[in-house]
Image 1 (cartoon, rainbow, N blue to C red):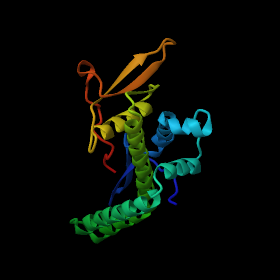
Image 2: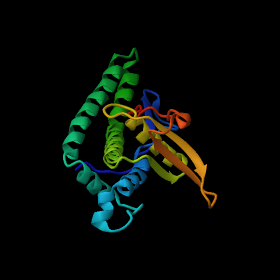
Image 3: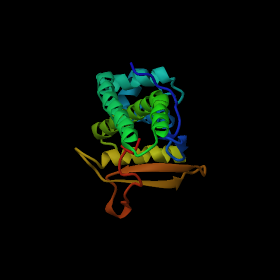
Image 4: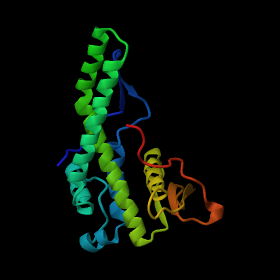
Amino acid sequence: MFQLHYTGSKPIISQHGIFFKEGKEDKYIYLRTAIYLLLSIDKHYYEKYKGSPSEKLSDQEILEVLQVYEPNLEQHLLEEEQKYEAHIEEMREHARSHPLTEEDRTTWLNNIEIMRPYLIQREINKLYYIHCIKAIKEIIHEEHLKEIDINFSLKNWHILTSIAGNLEYGVKSVRTAIKVETDKEGNLIAKLLINPPADLFSSPSVAGIDDTH
């Protein structure tokens, strides 16, 4: 099974060095909360385990949960990883074809090779996140859910927009809206509304989850 662990922000690789793009976080940071949401909305989880899911699952436990929802997950990831290896080769070809000195070209190619494990792991983390979001979409449809609530934070908002974007795309697409309200204790709550009334409708801020690598 492919491993799961944090890497970091999106790298920018060139003959000048390796830099990291602010705001392009590793999807790993969202996955644990996304798994918690998945288990929270699945009534079969409660029937089987007779309790609330934990928000502190280990990386290995996260992988085990995902395999329950998608038994062929490892094969899917293998196919998707091979596609990403082809993407890295395209990066190398771009460096080879760029009008540079031989020294600069060699430096660029070496930088890509140095970052290859980082790039692949970051892509694997993203793929796990995408598959988790797709599993959430399936549970929403199976359970005919109309709303998902979670404490507001920028991280949780990102996860809800990922779910919303996936619900609005492809087969069985539905309208969604995301809003923030205050509960009785004064806490901010982010709410994902599925097929909301027309007067509440607003497009999610993210149209999908397949953002750039």
